[in-house]
Length: 305
Image (cartoon, rainbow, N blue to C red; front, side):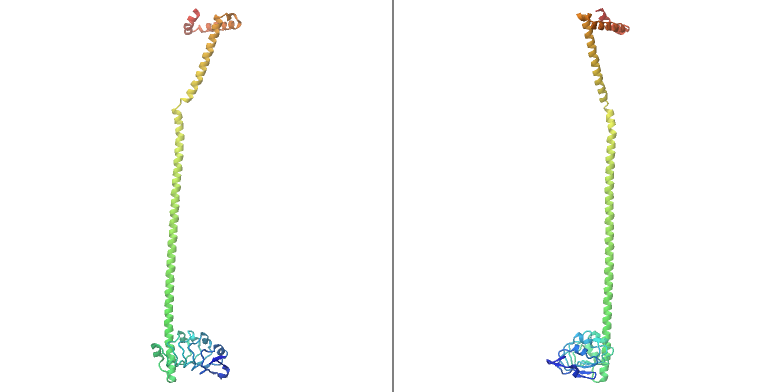
């Protein structure tokens, strides 16, 4: 049900054939849902109401062929007004329209148009001209459609230019991104090469240090035999110590033997069996030693005693 000064209006009561007359109903808004239920109402008269705007849903009434919106207070039409592709006759007399939506260019079947008594922008007002008779109204429809199509074409070209500019900008950004990534890869590659070179130098330095330590160790090991050769006194000194011990032992034995011989020669023990054996050994040894001249000269004084 449509609103009309607070009272309900039965749209079917207003329908005569394919014409639906809702003029002079004090409508503040269009009953779109109810109108959508009457697809055979291809001629709609909404003139002489209080309409200031049309909802976007109004553009779903694509079955409309003739539409009268004259003597309202419309300030603009919906942006998708061009969806009313079957519209042939459009009366917008005496509203507050300044311009038309770009989609108006899609009303390819529009044959009749009245835009009189609207505060249209100068360019659109000049194109629309007067609509004082059938011929002028048809010319207005043709000229306005051409004008709006030109605007749409210019907007499409502008849109394409913007799209192309965005694509170029995107390409530029992509090129910059790729260049930046390439630069970053090159930087990482250079840093990696520098890191490898640093580690190589560290490795070489460590190897040289190890070689130096090895050479020093070999040098020190090579010098030890020289040190041993330059101090040969220890083994002979050890040998001399043993020789001295043996010499001392021989001297002690000799002194002991001389002491025993003296006891057996001088004391009363000379007649004892032990001394007898000692004296015999002494005589035998003296006989043996006298065979050499040197010893004879040494022992000669002793024999005289």
